[in-house]
Image (cartoon, rainbow, N blue to C red; front, top):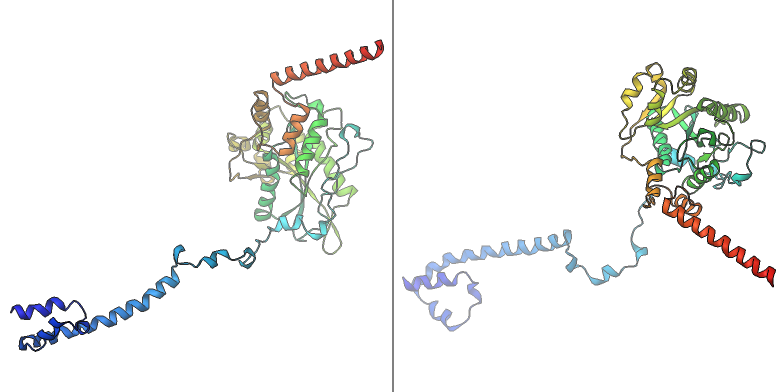
Length: 386
């Protein structure tokens, strides 16, 4: 029995490959005949072949980083496929079409300190020239406010409203305007109209090709109610310009609407703040696009404005952003950074002109002014004595 077990121990190896003396001695033994049963070990060979065939397939489908040739990683960038650019949304493509290639990015950037109502011209340069879809109702959005200073959220309102109009309404946005309030508004923290016109122009020229700034309202010495501002836009767009051209060459009337945040609609619902006849014209004739704002309960505000509910369109703010001009002024007063809350070039303008400065900054600026005046006087006196 011990001789019979010996080949069983060796059967785990390919028996045919052993040519050593022990193998020769065992072969004549009669009891070794049952080792013929060990022959089925040949069945292992196909398994090995199958494994050998599968292994390359696995490597082909799942190559490891170490198995890649070094030359593959040294291919020039030009050989790699270039991703196909994603098409612009309908409204974005329309705003940057060849038909609008004559849009001037610095439209209306005259010296604001020399502007008057006498030399005023309506800033039409950024308006769309031809309606993209004749079945749509052309729309111009007007945002009235202090913009002291203008923030990124003010700019985002126009983009959010344009998206909303494209997907949820039959309107086609053909233009948008900031209309800064005049100095007669007398609001706390309000920079001069000159600075606010400049800042809003800088903001749009640095980021948009279709949003403009109309200085008509702030050029007035008296306070201009919102309804008169909307009437002004309606007059310029439809009576002076005659509307917008369609694909057939005909002119189509442009609808004007107010664009605002939820805080404005909340004031409209407060008794006594707005004249009823003004509200009737603003919401009844023009309508409003209202951007939701965190911390403002817009539902309560809309309850008292139910009679104009069909003309009030609430735009959901999918990404919450509660930056405000008030917070920017507060940050400045406390000496904190305001960068990335408002356009970079507006930040530079604010620092350059010392707007909304902290008391410490104002004190340093005053001391610097006194020193400059003193040095100037000393220089003048030296010249005189000589």
